[in-house]
Picture 1 (spheres, rainbow, N blue to C red):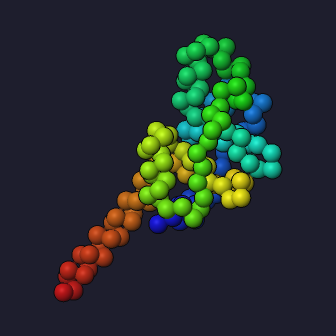
Picture 2 (cartoon, one colour):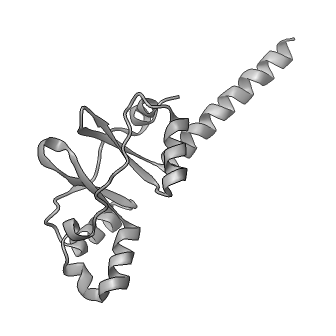
Amino acid sequence: MTVRSILNAKGADVATIDPRASLADAAHMLAARRIGAIVVKGPANSVAGILSERDIVRAVSTYGAASLDRTVDETMTREVVTCEAKDSINAVMEKMTAGKFRHVPVVDHNKLVGIISIGDVVKARLAQMESETRALQDYVAGS
């Protein structure tokens, strides 16, 4: 199973934000969309960074309420781990586990084409396991 199969099921809509937006604007967008991270847009639809709920909490912890007036650019994670649609779900799960993050932008030739979350990966993996279980049960029943 690949990242492409997840994107085919969930769609390629990605919440993005301008790096000059405020953290308050980002927090409102995360809350309104009920998501945990937002991709920061770079030139030509590239990924300049990612901003997660955790990033905002760290900023508030460090700078207090005034941090909400800071820009996304000042707070975002700049070194973003990405994947490609052709990557296996297992490989992406390994990246997420090793890096302790829950969202991975999907890129094609350095252009943003989607995003997957740990929830998307777990859902896809469970569906795959259920399918394999049914196939084994059918095989055993047919023997």
